[in-house]
Image (cartoon, rainbow, N blue to C red; front, side):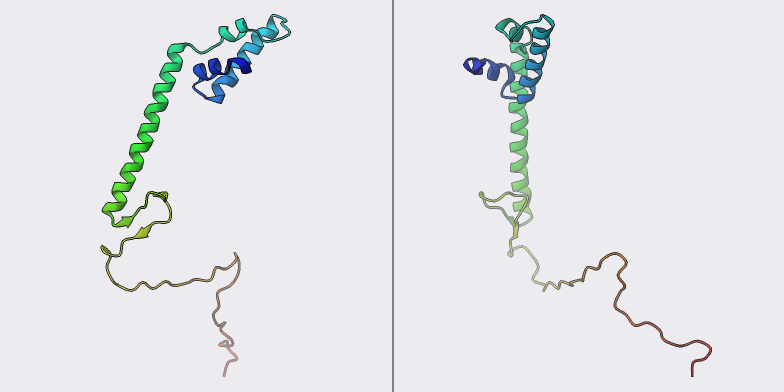
Length: 134
């Protein structure tokens, strides 16, 4: 099979799942014939058709193009919002806002201490106040 790697690549377009299914079906055929090994006939019987391989390749290329155009749209959106996107950064993380388009009001962040479930808030308990209170 190593000698025919290009045949497997050509028919599976590099998709390991397709190769796995192809080899599984070929092995099942070989075992049903009580063959001791896979041969060329077993593999050719279950090889994906050339037309199917061409269709899978076309769909894969179209899918990649859709993903690439989606990334371009993200860059356009971010630049319209005033966010800087450098070519070395992933546009989804580490965004730096452009200070040219933002208002100049100071930002105040309130830090809340996270408590574990069941932990009480820090406040005073009422002491006394019953019938016997002075």
